[in-house]
Amino acid sequence: MNTPLIPLGLAIIMITVGLSVRLDDFRSLKDNIRAIGAGLIAQVLFLPLLALTIAIAMKLAPVYAIGLVVLATAPGGITSNFLAMLARGKAALSISLTVMTNMLAFVTIPVMLSVAFWVIKDPLIANQSTDDLFALPFGKMVIGVLVISALPLALGMALRHFFPAFCERIVTKARFVSSAIFGAIVITSFVTEWGSITAHWSDVAPAVILLNGLAITFALLVSRAFALSIRETITVAMECGLQNVALALVICQLLLGNGALMIPASIYALVMNVSVVVLVYVGHSLIKSPKPSSFDV
Image 1: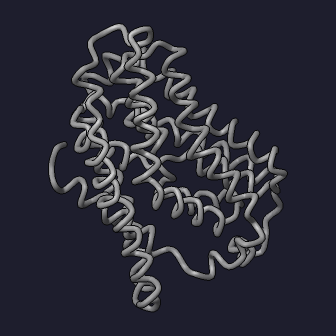
Image 2: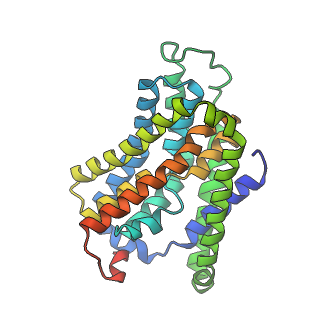
Image 3: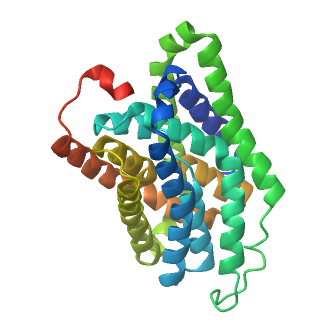
């Protein structure tokens, strides 16, 4: 999987996310500061700490523990905006959370990973030699995530701002291409690590499934604490349940240089689809069908 085409594919995905962003999407958010705050707290702070807690409690091997935290630090996924709308959530809120978490990722990912490396490296927790695993290239991580995530996202947003008509014509095709690239990255990771996935499924899959379930649960609890509406709550839950698996895989392989780290993210790519179906069902059960334009409020 160690090929220049992988980060290039991820860059295309992030440009496509940027192409979907309109300034109008953000105008109503001044009245939704609580929803933005709840989403950022749940995803940027609680989710990585939750992954770290699960890894320690379930006594995951250090390589899988770090892989789980990498997954949890990844920002919102490429399809979360569409699926939030499908679940009758708030499209503008979903787009805003996706953009903000991806733009902040070059800071949040290295910082949260540094905390995780420091905790898991503790000899009372790690029961094997971790000298090679825990050589976190902090500077390389910051630059790498900036180049493959934040900058392409900013480029896509700039293109949408200066060439709106052109972007409107190509955005549907761009989303199709990006979805295909996302699928190719995930499938490639499966093929590359299939032996390890099957060999360690019983060790890793329960932690991944638990992370997905608790991530959504924590999102619901945080949303309740912030007194969010049902549509806002569904949106925050969708953002927390759907991670940018492609970015997590690239970080594990290209920036950390350890293919075994990809196993939690590879499994999560399957697990999160189940939670998506549940959230869409819940959204349709609790929320009356709004007018099409109200999705953008």
